[in-house]
Each structure stands twice: as C-alpha cells, then as structure tokens.
Length: 307
Image 1 (cartoon, rainbow, N blue to C red):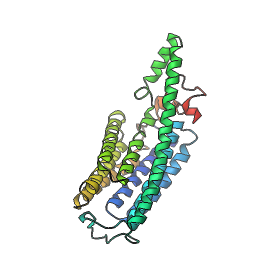
Image 2: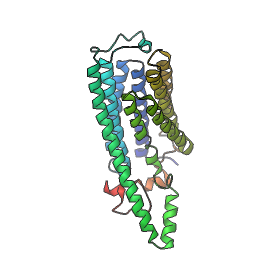
Image 3: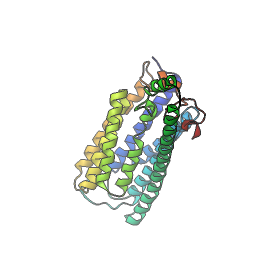
Image 4: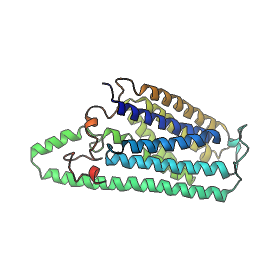
C-alpha cells in the first residue's frame, strides 16, 4: 500500500537527516571542517524541523526521543567544533595532505571546555530518556496490576493489543529510536576516553540495528548500520590504537561514505508506492498511544498523554 504525502515527506526527512549525520562524521574523521561543519548545521536544522513537523501527531515517547536526538546532535557538534578548533595534532592518524593542525590554535584546556559543554547536553538527553523510561515502567506496573483486577475478557483484549507491540511494551516506530540512548552513552565514554565501555555501547547499538533490519527490512537501516560500523572503527583507531596509523580513519570514512550513498538511495525510494513505513497499517492508527501499552490505549491518564 502506498503512503500519504505527509508520510512521504516524513520518510524523506528521516533519510536526509541520516545523510547529514553520516556526512558530518565522515568530514570529522577525515579532519575536513569544510564538510563536517555545514553537514552538522544541516543535520541539526533538519532534525529540529522534523521534530516540530511531527509534534502535533507524535506520541510522548516519540517526542522524547526526538528531543534527545536534537540534544545529542548539538552536543556532538560542539565536541567536533572544539576538536577542529583546538585539539593538538598528535599521531600519524592525523597525517592527511589537507590537514596541518587545528584551525585556531593548539589548546587542550579549550578543547576540554568544549568536551564539558557537549557532556552537559549528552547528560541532559540521557536524563530525559531515563526519566521517561522510569515513568513508563511505573505506568506499565500500574496497568499490569489493574489488568489483574479486570475480568478475563478484558485481559484477553489486552493480550491481543500487546501482541502488536515489540516485546509487548513498545510500538514499532518508537523501537526504531531506542538505539539513541546507548549511542549517546557511547559518546559520553568516548568523550572521557574510556574505550571498553564505549565498545560495549556500540555492541548494544549494533544488536538493535541488526534487529531493526530483521524486523522492518528498511534500506535506511543499512545506512545506520554502516554509520555505527564507521564510528566503531573510528573509536578503536583513536582510543585503542592512539591514532598511530591513518588506516582506521580511512576505513571508518569508507564505511560512512557507503552509508551516505545508501541514505541517498533511501531518500529517493522513500516516496515510492508500497514503501514499508512503520506508520502504515495499525501503527498509523496508534499515533497517540503511549510507549507502554498494558491497558486501554486511549486512557487519558496514560504515560503517552501525561508527558
């Protein structure tokens, strides 16, 4: 079944956002501010526009994840900017013909100020997500207790409703954004130069992206998989190998460039009739459902309506 003009526009916005995420990181890993700065600005503008465009129809869960994405992009872009401006050039991993050192001046103290600012934004995004998940968990517990007091017919209706949710608690559309939490945490650890916890977070995101590919079979998820791959190679080269060689950055940039190409294809295929959008079918009627669903989806006191 084809999608509506609004859904086509939303799908294209998402593909364009991923395109600029990838382009920003590709410019960053190759130390090309001429690429990374415009791409970062475009990504922030697109994600903010997408968040505002969907605000009137999105559930509270989607709004929370959308705000977290914008906060992460802002923090990530601040980190990148201060690195490009002030981070001392060390290691052969920075030996590109076009790179001669930071744009402004070498200053570890100024660079660490940027890291602190970015960490504040990362922390705000994580606090927002954790607060929402905590409220959702409490709501799930309350609903489960309420179901136990209802008659068997009501319980059967609830079970049928939960069968349409991922793991019985999250809508398919929201599930596709759950990766942003561990991804932000990965950036926090990267910022602190803690390799092992950062790789654990990358592994969690890899598992989620692979599950998205299995469940939804969307081309854009291939671009996201390449994005995670490129960043994982990058963090290993920078923190694990101490930027002792240039090849990890080149390998990371190659994966990111492949993701850029895939996101372009996804952008142009998005409006085609039959595009497999999670909003189609039952999910299209559930735009006002909460993150969790253990009872009546339209309960005015639900988490989705309360936040």
